[in-house]
Length: 48
View (cartoon, rainbow, N blue to C red):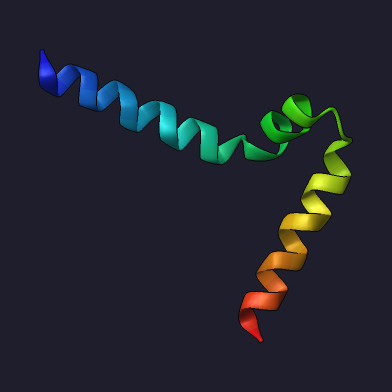
C-alpha cells in the first residue's frame, strides 16, 4: 500500500511540474504568458 501512495505522489508531482505554467496562472489569476516570461527570465539569470 505504501508503494502505491508513493507512486501516486510521484505521478502528481511530475504532472504538476509539466503543467506548472497553467497551474500557477490559475492560482495567481495572472495570464499564462506573464508566468512563462518570468520562468524564462529566471532560467536566463541562472545561466549567467
